[in-house]
Length: 355
Image 1: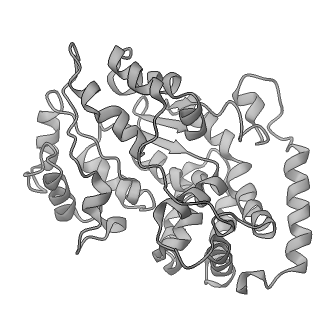
Image 2: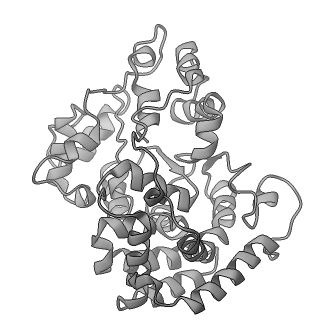
């Protein structure tokens, strides 16, 4: 989201001649820098109203000086003359955040980037820089062990997987219970749990998202077809075509704050762990992702951009979602085969989580 933040707030687009929209606030330090200051737990920031309003004030956001009681009124009255942007997804895991946002800012538009879950975990492992003395394999093993040993974890995931695709409340309730587990207090577990999109998004779908006010963006498409994707993001946010300055910036393809870490084997999941983590995602993400995207687009009024190429082509429902005839009930052979291979490996290496 840092890159999209820059695309939307760079001086060349914020101060473009003829820009019909109010400029977005832009400071030299983005949200993440302020969230790391002492006394702030970014993962619990939003549910704490006083701290959230303070956070807005430090960033120079409209209504940053409002009290918790006057915040909704301020947002409503300022919405026509001020725009604000929060590019910190640290409260994505919270089952309370959608409820509070619904009260404080019910008309906000939300853009969510979706990356292939294993690639997401590896990218965040490199980008975060919090585990310089360990490997992603070690973190994956701890996460899988926690799923097997923490009381309630496995049954909750099984309950979530059994939810009918149309029952968003069922998945939202399961995620509420899962995100409340003690294991979810650990950042390294969020590294992998954050890829369980179908469950985590259910809370937001049920409590907060509104037709025409949420956009899901395939981050792979964003980085490979920046100008085309940004054109749709601009139309979603502002209801207008791109300005020449916005198109010029998007066409550069520049990536801000790209993780400056020399790749090494410890940053990539080993074949055995890739099979085991991949099987988890296949059961809880792969099999339901395109059904979720289809329902959000056709029934819930969401904008969905991308998801029309790699790495999504082997996901069930890819062809139908992209207007090619297929059958929802048929799981591609590649998915079934990888699941079967993993089961054989896992049965023979059941202690791998302790390695």
